[in-house]
Length: 150
Image 1 (cartoon, rainbow, N blue to C red):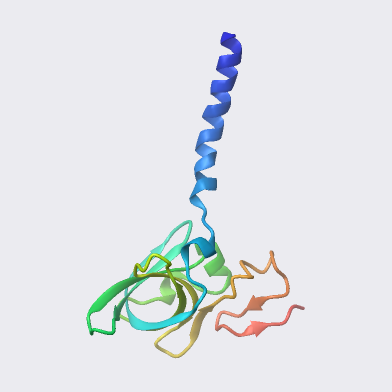
Image 2 (cartoon, helix red, strand yellow; image 1 turned 180 degrees about the vertical axis):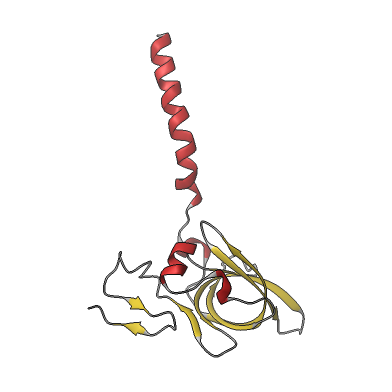
């Protein structure tokens, strides 16, 4: 009996830490609206870390008040595949973002497209593609143009 208890305890000790990653991941539909919205504002902060990259932007709302929005991107690895690096965003730079706002009416959104101050499209995704090696028929260049597979 004691041996069975120790085996069960050891199994739980192995499974519990690995379960947090499974619980941490979320569904896009559970958190974000499906209707795309546009924002323009100044970059205030960049968090380049797992599981998602977050870009913070000061945006003026309809009342003229500045609200700091958090825009969520895919993982850093997926950003690098699209040619985006930490240096792609400069503090104080104006960006235009098309994204899907959070369902909870908080200042957060999942990014679809970012246009930098230079006018260059810095990032674009259809969320069907999370990397060239996973879906071979949808690829984007770093400037946002859709590429045909070879």
